[in-house]
Amino acid sequence: MQIILLAVLVYSCRKNFESIEGENAVLQAEQDLTIISSDTATESTSSADGRAITMSYWLTSKSYVEGNAPYVVRMNTKNVAKGTVIPYTITGIDSGDISSGKLTGNFVVGENGTDSTTLVLKQDSITGSTDVMKTSVKTISLSVPLNETISATAITSFYLDTISYGDIDVIAPGRGANMFYDKIGLNLPSSSTYTMPFDRDVRYTWWQLQKGQSTYDWSIIDADFKTCISKGQKLSFRVMTLDTDAISWSSTYTGNNKISYPLFLHSQMQAESAKDWTYGGSWIPNWNSPSYLSAWRNFCSALASHINSTSYNGVSFKNVVFHIDVSGFGNYGEFHSYPFINNYPSSAHKLSDASYKSIVDAQTSAFSNFPLVGNINMFVGEMSLYQGWYSLTASNAWGKIGIRNDHFGWTSTFKNDIQNNTRSYNGLSFKNEILNRWKYAPVCGEPMNSASAVTSGGSCAFWNLETEVRTYHASQFSNQNNTGVTSSCLDDNFRRASKASGYRLLVKSGTISGKTVTLNWRNSGIAPAYENWDVYLQVRSGSTIVWSGMTSFKPKFFQPGTTTVTTTLGTSATGSYSLYVIVKDPSGYRKPLVLTNKNRQSDGSYKIADIKI
Image (cartoon, rainbow, N blue to C red; front, side, top):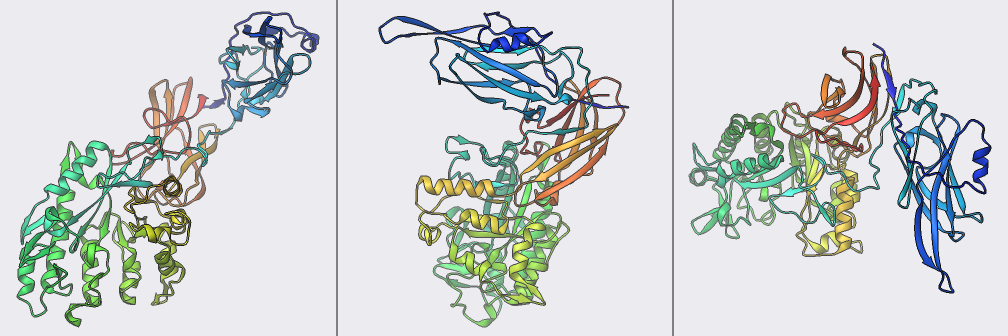
């Protein structure tokens, strides 16, 4: 099977032969060429003395295009002032088809009423009289036929048109500002355009999901899974065993104090020597309680079993999980004891290393095949060196634990967590491990909700957000602004940080030789995609797929940079086809991956080239 790549040009002609004067005589002097002309456009104006004047415009060129030879298109005018600027556009080809010249630009009317533009088509782009190259200006256009005696030349390399970083942001799964509950802080990708995010982030209290020792109420989490499925989103969630800010629907009361963990567990801890206790109107669990550790382990196992065995509209819940927050200790499940850190009733209530390990192990064991992310406070702050080390070295079958930062934009904590972090244990530098965690697991979070915190050190709220996102190599953060500040500057900072986050995957170029297709892939972002994606090549005749095959390229942990992937096409009948690439979710849930290539098709694929087999 021999494959020929076609960079195709289409030509047709709508002629209106006007007189060719002045510089147009140069075209007439070229032997064996037919000069063609466009229709004439006219505009009416008045002279200084009130006379009516008709201005005329038309295009001329030679009648065919030769590869590797200059091709001239001339703008002709009559009664048009010298220096008048007239924009032009050439379509039917792209920048990869020319070796010099511009496809868009301006004619500037000269002394003789004309101007011209010259371009040179690559010989590889000349394939026959089948397509159209059209020069358009004002209300007219000139379509040029190709001399069919020019022989076609097979080419083996090609370049794909890509979306530059300066263009509007690419909304893709697993990257950018995601939805927090059902909240949207600002329009993305632009102030005038809102696109539904592919991911949603939610929180639950333990009390909401478990009512008795063996009694679970999954209705609220099921509702969120179903909502995500109906919108084509993935769900990330955290279960908080303590939320001192919990409201009526996420907590209950006992003994005139609010509680956000199950009442049966409260009763069990009250029967132990080191009981759960109250602070500021909330019940605080004893993190070291055998009852607490056992109940947490059983709960995690039950929740994982429910997710793995439940589906909605034919979609399994397990295929809708993006990541799960490691929790089980601290206020809001954030692994800190604010506001009661210095008010524990006894040393027996302060989290021990053994209890910490048990809390983390309960989740790595139960959610063995899901991405887990741990709050940055697991590695810094009040956690012991052992606890920080264990968090940074623990893993499940999916991989290492990712990082979640719930105070993005707050420069003081950014300095403490990263720049001034000198912690180490068993030879492991916490700072280096945190800064390199993106290579193995996702980094995500949410913006800090204090206006003063996110403005300190700068002239506008979230002035440092993009820098922090890039330093962490973060993939996502919540699309919310709870600072109370509203300004275009804040919005711009937020959008820039969202654009900077995550991956930007594209097919840069490739070659075809015989049945061998080589694609040059690039990740121009700051992090991998982290999800399982399968990359397919497809040979199509019109809309019919005549051959499809999976390539060896796996984007899951593809870091920023480039890689080359070679695939051998299967057997197809002799004929003309088109070659496409499409990146699929093996579970069938996600829509095909959004690349930063242009010309995405309605089915999520991208056309690479026209080929002949």
